[in-house]
Amino acid sequence: MSGAFSVSGLIYKVNARRGVVETQSGGQMDYGDILSKIQHIISEKHSGELAQTLYSEAAETRLKTLIIRYLNSERLSAKGFANISELCEHIYDDMAGMGIISRCLKNPDVEEININGFDGVWAQYRDRKEMLQSFSNAADCANIVRKMARFGGVILDGSRPIGDSYISKGVRMSGAIDPCVDEERGAIASIRKQKPFFVTRENLISWETATETELDFLTLCINNGVSIAIAGATGAGKTADMGLILNSASPEKRIVIIEDTKELLVQGEGRDVTYLQTKEPPNEVSMLDLLKLSLRLHPEILVPAEMRGAEALTVQEAGRTGHTILSSLHANSAEAAYDRMLTMCLQAGTKLSEERLLKNLVEAFPVMVFKMQLPDKSRKYVEIFEATGVRNGELLGKPLFQYKVTHHDRNEQGRIVKTHGSHCHCGAISEKLAKRLSLCSVDQKQLAPLLEVKG
Image (cartoon, rainbow, N blue to C red; front, top):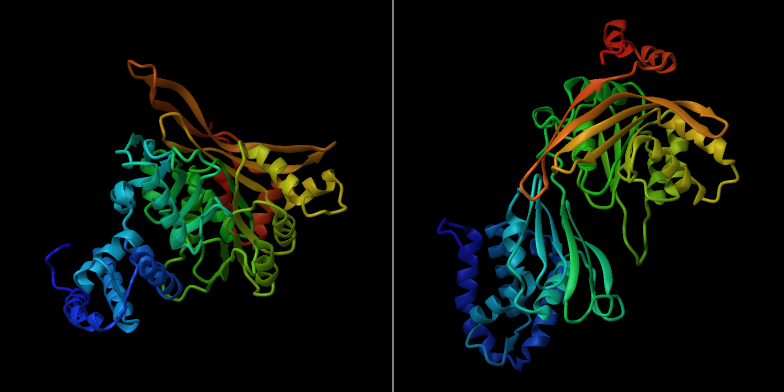
């Protein structure tokens, strides 16, 4: 801990000294029983403080203060501990200590942590990955994964060995323990850290992820009633781009955002923004439930952060009835994204034909962005595609912008270390899209560059 003055630190020290006397009058319990009791109280009443200990020394002190408070109020003391301060430190380490991955959780440059067992732990940065020190044994690895799941209120045990959880805002964890993982391996987990506002417009341009013209086009669309979906694999950076686009929207726009956990934040005073979050079972509240609610909130921009299933049918209906949609999905190309949305719509049990559904999707989402992480770990807008219609069940459209790879640089081991290429403006927008933008007050001066192919 740092030596800087902290009110929480002072309270913790005073409570620790006072607690030595107070707990002496209480009956002693087994340490495991006390740990379970304190864990239950903290998880129920102070889950935020528990999660933030991963990132903040101040939060660490606040959590220790809470542990001291409940040890005192419940008059708990454990066998084998000389005083309440020693007991508190031990409880804190068991509740919040993350072992070898603590450093990566606090490092803003680490985007993802993958645990492949106790001796296979990897940190993923924007442009590289590195193997970390191993856990001391399989049991330690399993305990850390259980602990991370518990931060989001998920209990991993023999009856539920697989689970998804949220360590804190913007930090997701998916993990598994025995019997789904060999007991000798301990556990597996993937931890993703979303940093939407670490990425700026200037970042994307300087990294050659996108061009100024491409970003201007997407801003023009979202401000003028043209819905956008961003497709790509996990880790492509879709959430970061959605945050960037939303923050470029006109300040007077009413925005409703639906997420599993709050990652998107529209900045600026006086913004008309509503945030909604899904809820896991029991008493589940799904994306579809919140979509139905949001349509009664009169959004001008509706943001179902990710389409995964049957909710896509409701999303496309909203996109065809006067709502501007910004969403994302997993797909391997811009054109494949329409097939993926079609499959999701069919999961809703609609009686519409596939061709009719595909036509609806084209109407709802005229513009599709495909973003990809290339072999050198750089991220690019590989394609911005305009869908123009459907003929004989086949999607019609054309790329407006593309990133074309020219060659790769490889190291002595043959690994690609640098991908070279360039963005090009390869297609003019359709007359239909130009007319739509024009009706929404986009002037000819803004439209002219989009109607010309620059190559």
